[in-house]
Image (cartoon, helix red, strand yellow):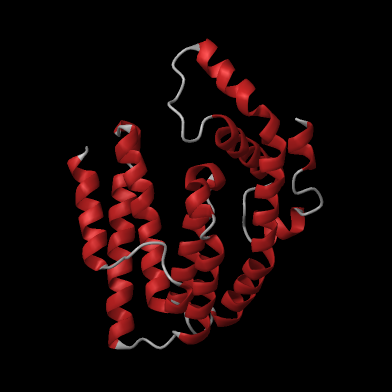
Length: 220
């Protein structure tokens, strides 16, 4: 509880400015993510109380360190995000559709429990996703044929993800992991279009996204 109280202390206004969950809720998310990374990540999940307690005991000395590292990585996102939100506010009147598309993207990146849901591999990519969104709103506002086609593809994949997400509760763990991968492949696809020099974590294309969508459906 003390750790949760200390995390992100004094940053309430910044969190509100970037439309993140409130400080207490986000602090709890950080702690739960740190516990998972320290005690249960890359391990077979315990099925008995004794196994759970053993895993917790083995990793508990790393929880505080991991929590503060995660806090630092989130704090590093605040200024770029504040700048992005400022740009969106300036562009909204003249480019409402493009601004709403980026706003929707940000809502998808930062829902409740986004730290735990994203996991460390994808959370490490967030600076890149924010930078790509900033470049889009700075440089890619004209609705060229290429841009319209790309936006159409993104919107279709977002709808596909939303439909699959509705069925997540019925998925086996493997399918859920593939769903998370699909969600962030969409983000990587944006990077490949708006900020190629930032490089994607893995090769990504329309065909690869379609194949990933089918892979998830086969596991339902």
